[in-house]
Image (cartoon, rainbow, N blue to C red; front, side):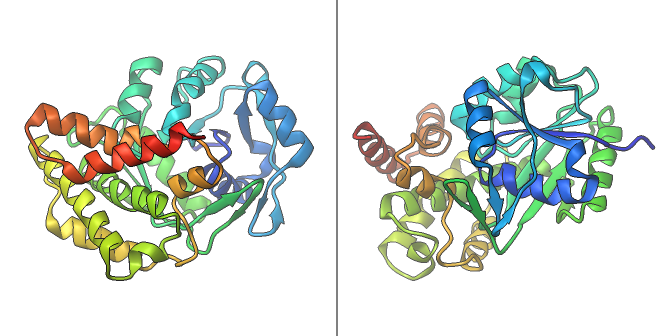
Length: 306
């Protein structure tokens, strides 16, 4: 079986650094590189990044200088996906396997539309407590990558086998999920809750790990996302909700999700992927979503002041 020998990553946020570190130390950092625009390349070359206090010997290059990799990982925020696809068009090859670590339920569809879906696999990153402040990433739980294909998809099975072999070789915790679409929607439900509540409550996971109004509001937002999934034909259930609330309770209390980090940095968040999507789909499907409507207004009002 052919194996993956080279890996490119677009996005040097928490997940990009985390998985770059895990993969690079096993396949060799000479076989892994990040791709960015010229300004980001210059900034990285002057500062660099660390992972749990260890300097990461990453290479970063512009798309025009990048070779076609065996595997391309999108690790940007949803707000940066369009520009990331623009970079990928310049160097991804016809046989490059592609995975997306983006939150939400639409990135694989968008990437497939823009780049062709023949080698796009479905992936969910969950359970990590990575926090990036400036150039420094810290984490205690690397989480799990859930990977898979829609039921009945045989054409992309060889690509999935190669991805699983790479993750095994690199000691990256992963799970091959036979119902990956369910997993993607269930993870979206999780993010709709924990990301948004930690942002509006201006705290880490601790603010939703204890009983009280913030935790209740988080669960309410998740339950609305669950109803949207059910109306869309994906069987996300109360059992899934309980599982993900339990998962949140295992995370380091001082850790924080990406939207809280966005708030601290006064960056625009992924609220459109979370409350924005819940509200839009709720209106289209006739599902009341008052919790997410209020969260959407509150987050947008905050961001308007940045």
